[in-house]
Length: 167
Image 1 (cartoon, rainbow, N blue to C red):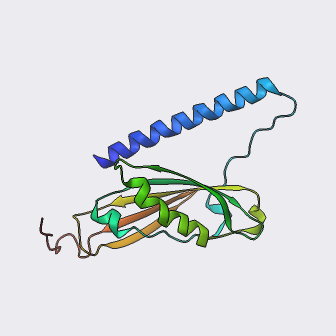
Image 2: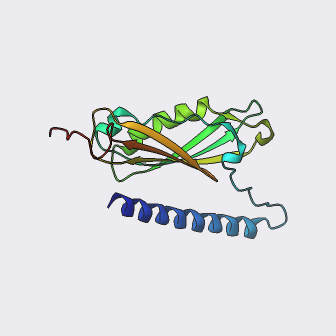
Image 3: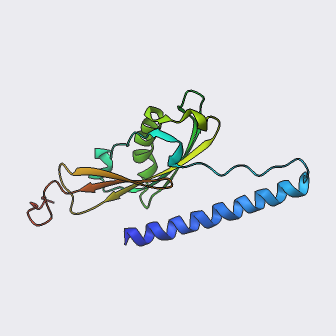
C-alpha cells in the first residue's frame, strides 16, 4: 500500500513540477524572448566524487516513517554543497521533521567534482521500510543513476529466523 501511495505521490509531484516549469518558461519567453535562456537541467550523481549516505534515523524507524527526500544543491568551487533545497514526500506527518536533518548533514559532508562548480545537483534519497519492526534493523543503501539513493531497513535477522517483536 505504501509503495502504491509513493508512486501516486511521486507521479503527481513530477507532473506538477513539469507543468510549473513549462508555465515558467512560457512566461519568461513572452516577457523577454531575446534575452531569456532556459536554465540548465540539474545534474545528478555524475557530479559527485563522494556521496555520504544519510542515516535512517532510529526515531523514524521506531515510528515506521519512510518517504522520499528530494534535494537540490549548488556546487561550490571547493566541491561542497551550498544553497541546499529540500522537499520531503511522505505519507507520514513526521516525515519532513525526521528525514530532513540526516539528509542535510550527508549533503554537507559529501564531495563534488570541481568541474561541476556553479551547477545544481539533484539527488533523491528514498527511505523505505522492509520487514517487520525490529529493535536493531540492518540498514542498507544502494545508488541508481542518474540521481536516486535508496536507504532501506531490513530486519536484523533473516525473515525466516526473525524473532517477532512484542507489541
